[in-house]
Length: 319
Image 1: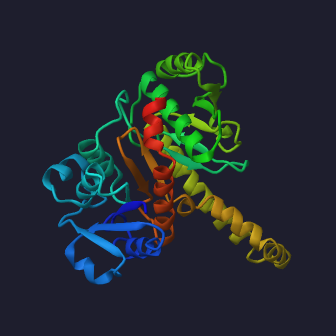
Image 2: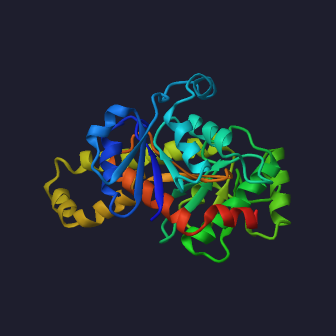
């Protein structure tokens, strides 16, 4: 049975929602919750608790917190993975601390200079667009972007079954002469990489499904992620307001309710559960800070899929 360690104290809704989600997975996976001893009384017999007396809050500075909190849940959880006592680690906590703990305890895959957070974004196609980096690195060189593309392509092959993922470079225009110096250099490297590189991708194309993997620096990727979340929420709010006083529109909304619910699910972060941190020597899944029990269930499932499909090994072989 696959063993998944879960940070019980990570996220805005910890520990209650984290525990609920983890417990729901306990019949399918071996769940190891990492947290303080008082949580033991909340757990059923089929969930193990590994004690960690400290945890890192969402607003703490990651590097300083990791230095001062040696017994934090993220460091203890990563140690479990490093020692082979867990196959993967899931956390909805401070993403900077999760990344820092990953580097400290697991290290990078040989040949990878920087890890990247890979976010699956819904598209008009049946398969998502994988965007990386989504926040692990504020600045990225052309070489970093090439590595992101290699990791993203290998991950997409392993998890989504696409034999030759189409890779795009996020840019301000489709022409290969567009962009800053890093983008220009990255375009050249990607064109010579042997990947299925389709050129520059503008922001408006991200949801078209034309590219399976899109690379950018973490500053831009994180802005895209947060904008997409906010836009999706705003659209549904505006839609509700527009039809509130129009009975014919309310009738139409009633008839389309199931379709609207399906659409909302496609843009709900909880459906994906988490984003893999690619480039570290172990399976690490970073969940949204607002994750509820459903999001944790899906994050655990995503982590287990990475273990089953041997994503880390394939990244090592295909980087």
